[in-house]
Image (tube, rainbow, N blue to C red):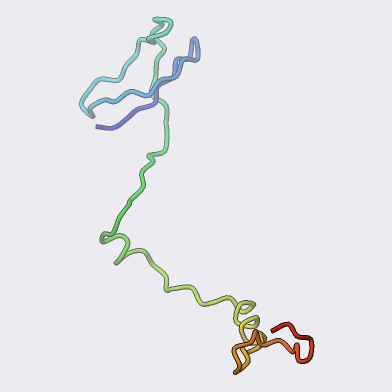
Length: 96
């Protein structure tokens, strides 16, 4: 069953109401009793979760390519030394 947003134009009272599609719209405000309670136009909100056809077949787009900056950083990083060091030039400093 859909949830409809209602608002009273007399007192400003707002309420969300769970109704069947076949139910008649509400007209009496539950707060002030005026016959000015009307449905509001709202966007339907829903979220698809889990794995399913929408995630596997219609998600669209390919996997994003790695950023050029990340590739450049990986290429400029020093290679680890064969002796198991960190790869920086610390010869003679006694850091390892």
